Length: 261
Image 1: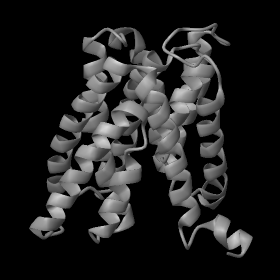
Image 2: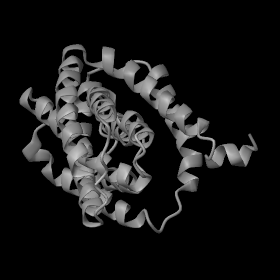
Image 3: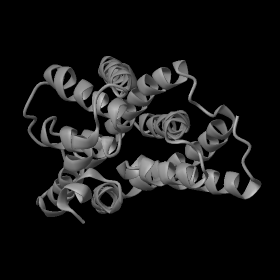
Image 4: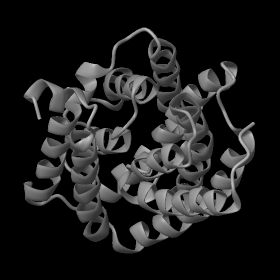
């Protein structure tokens, strides 16, 4: 059990609130909480495990908020959530055996591409468009694949779910956001179960941050539902670029080592 100073606890709780707010709109809450954990001196594995615990509250809170307003039907989407949960659990189990260096090299490029798509693609709004695959095929392929990624690595999961829902399932921006939160909640459950089994979760600080995540996600989801694509698109673009820059600026990052900078 890590005993943290009061000002460190307050920093982590504030970071959790902000992460819940941002994540409920555009994803990327881990961009805020993971650095906060590391600044607080929490070891990386415990940071990842505790992040999944407190993230459950944020994604769960946002899911409930969107469901209450009819933007996602929880009952109809439970099977898809199960695939996301299963994929994430497998990813978390594989994380100890699969080298993540190639993901760290590719991810900034992918995130920038996602940001450019949402920034430059015309007519991306809250209106539905033609789907490129059936819901069953979408749930059988993209959902567990992105869930697996969330378990094995994690950053940008919400952005990838958003991109898949918009491009493959034909969802409008707001509906895609609502469904992303449900599947992100499910993927958090899968990874959390594995981290919990290995005993790398700091329960006290994780639960305190979870309360802040819950409140932040309530505020963020309400803002998103009031403004739709007008707020979701720019925040999604900013989040993707910020996460890409964070990965590129890591002194120990494999891309910087590969480029010799």
